[in-house]
Structures are given as C-alpha cells and as structure tokens.
Image 1 (cartoon, helix red, strand yellow):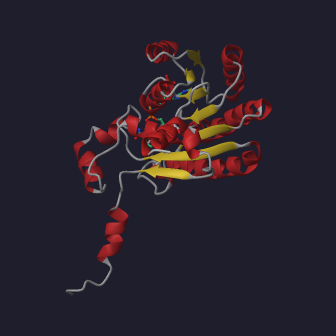
Image 2 (cartoon, protein in one colour):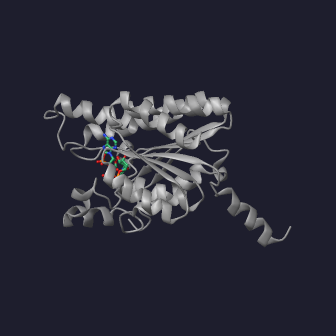
Image 3 (cartoon, rainbow, N blue to C red):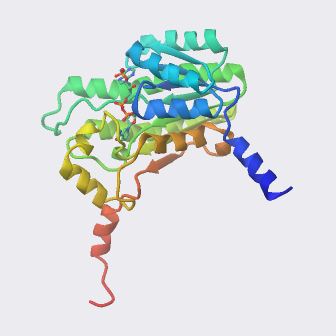
Length: 277
Ligand SMILES: NC(=O)c1ccc[n+]([C@@H]2O[C@H](COP(=O)([O-])OP(=O)(O)OC[C@H]3O[C@@H](n4cnc5c(N)ncnc54)[C@H](OP(=O)(O)O)[C@@H]3O)[C@@H](O)[C@H]2O)c1
C-alpha cells in the first residue's frame, strides 16, 4: 500500500458519514464550532439550547454544508426536558451516535464565604447533573441501537486548578472528569466511549470577562506556552477526533487543551538549584 493510500485510509477514520450527533449548547461558541465541524465531516446534527432563533441560524449553516440539522429549544438544566429532545432526535433521524455535552455556565464570581445556594444549584444542575441524566438517556438509546457511540463532555482547565472566584464552576468541572471515567467504565462493554475535553480560556461569550480585560488577557498569554488564548475551532478539532473512529481505542480520558499553561511549572523551576548558583 502506498503512503498516499495509507493517508487516505487514515483520513477516512476522521469522517462521520451516516452518524447523528446531538450537541447541547450548539447555538454559539464552542458548541457551534463542534456542530459545524461534525457536519463538515459528514454527520447530521441535533442542536439544542434555550433560544430557537439562534439554533435556527446555526442549522442554516449546517444545511449550507450539505447536512441536515434539527434545532430543538430546551433548557438542558431541567432534566424533564431531556426526553423531548431525545424523542425529537430519534423521530427525525432514527438514531444518535454521538453526544456532546457542551452546554455549561458560570453564573457568579464569588468566594467560598459569599457563594449563594442558588448559584451552586444552577451551576451544578447544568454543568454536572444534567450531563449525567441526558447521557443516561442517550446511552440507553445507543445501547439499544447496538452500534456503539461516543460521548464527549466539555469540562475546563478550571477542573484541574481553581480559577479565583470561580469555585463552584471549578468543582463542577473537576467532577465532570470523574463522571466521564464512570461512563467509560460502565459503557465500555457496549462500545460506547466517553471522553472529556478541558479547554482553557477560549474566545466565546462565556469567558468574555476573562479575555476583554487587558490585565487578565496579558497574564493568560504570559502563562501559556503558545502565548495566546484559544479559538473555538481548536476545541472542535479535538471533539472531531474523539467522536470519530480515529479515537476508537480511547475512552475515559481528558484532553487538556490549555496551550501549555506553564506558570505552575515555572514556579516549580524557580525552586530548583541552578547550575550557575
Ligand atoms: N470559553 C471558555 O473560555 C471555556 C473554557 C473552559 C470551558 N468552557 C466550557 O465550554 C462549554 C461551552 O462554552 P462556551 O464558551 O462555548 O459558551 P457560550 O458561548 O456562552 O455558549 C454556551 C452555550 O450553551 C447554551 N446554554 C447555556 N445554558 C443552557 C441551558 N440551561 N440549557 C441549554 N443550553 C444552554 C447557550 O445557549 P442559550 O444561552 O441560548 O441557552 C450556548 O449555546 C461550557 O461547558 C464551558 O464551561 C469554556
């Protein structure tokens, strides 16, 4: 087999032809780019978030790529709305092969002493609890279909090291990593894989406060090997890998996409004895 043929077959592993992907929070930011990337790779897409007009505009972009998109408005934080989303997806396409649990929120900047219970509940309900119960429902469909599947959970680098003032968000995102490991263990026998993507600051509405503030942005750039924050498409590339057969032997893992944030390593290096000291 020639090198060209080999590369040809490797590239085919990244295709999603004939697959259906359900993307939560698909109306903007990282979710939108994942939806468009998957459509470009051949998948049909079920898009969900709370505002139908925003979903319809992404659905139109998917259609321009030659794929079908079903926009379904739902508040994913409310578990009772999950059934309707999954039902609509199955009615329209007959199957779901990929689930991207992307919808997430950070509703407050508060310290341990200031945090109100309501903010804890809203954050945990969307970032963690709804992720579990939507996955439970979709995984049951995948198991029934008998063709395996891929679940991709969007966490954050804040799940590795707490961001100041974002305690409950950081806790929720750390828990997502364990949730993924539990899914991987329990769903592996059905060839349903589960993996996490943990982005660092990415240019979207959610993190606007972090990248529109000059001081924050400068600090972030300085602490990152690549010297910049991320763009949504850079998360979509990782999602495409995890969704596709290119990642067929990968499950239970977290891809940390933080541009090589090395401030902690730098600090550690300062404590090492230097040769010239
Ligand atoms: N951007 C970053 O720097 C960054 C870094 C690390 C991790 N992340 C994670 O990446 C994921 C995507 O965030 P993003 O940056 O792309 O944010 P974004 O641009 O604000 O998009 C969030 C998406 O989630 C939807 N959404 C919010 N609440 C929802 C709810 N209750 N039910 C259904 N949909 C809901 C939003 O639509 P509606 O508001 O219309 O519902 C929107 O489509 C999140 O899990 C976030 O924690 C982001």
